[in-house]
Image (tube, rainbow, N blue to C red; front, side):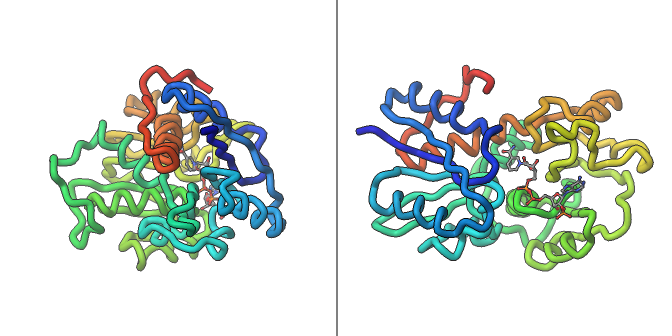
Length: 278
Ligand code: NAP
């Protein structure tokens, strides 16, 4: 059997997904390819055509990225509970003739966090009613990636504050995710984790930083986590390093969300060790 996977989004020329999935296919000894399907924002027939390819078996799996992660939801038959809670999908597969939308960003983020903040074995990852006051996170940004991060943190009892440059966007998350929306500029309080879930600092706008200089020092936390993977060290991570804070970029999460999608499509778990940089 030859697998054909693909990515729906726009623009796609910087995508690292083909490089990752090619390595997964090879490592698992499978025949296949990963194609890019650039579909412009308003091109609903273009989206529907690719979904039809999945229904008919021409494709075995689709990833979804900006700007379609949310716009695609009405065209799917089912959503996993996580995708429904996040309100965005990044992976689609055919299950019993129905199109199922999933979100592998939240579990991928959780897997990468485990190394820094291990969970007790046998932990029950249900949405926490009581937040743990000794695990405090500040999330910058309130878009799709922030929602995935926040869900994963709340399922692990983190106490979460969210800041977004449009206060109403952060406020919209307060009630469904039981987080605190920061509407003024955040203070460098005693957070354990700072997550950048905005594109500020992403290539080619390398001088961007979600924590502007005039806010002063970054919070003295145990990890500064930037979801951006290009460049490997954003201005935010550079400032964190110069402040002596541990840092993590978005590459481990990117490779894990891709591996989780690959597993959903093939039933196989690709090795992450020894992956060549894309
Ligand atoms: P999104 O849905 O467009 O949300 C972006 C958020 O950042 C919004 O709150 C947006 O506010 C805010 N924002 C945008 N530009 C900003 C700026 N210059 N300064 C401050 N805030 C800004 O995007 P997303 O899908 O959540 O993605 C966010 C980032 O995460 C991207 O860099 C993406 O590459 C990365 N990501 C990484 C992974 C991974 O696996 N490593 C996975 C998913 C996403 P407005 O609405 O006001 O613009």
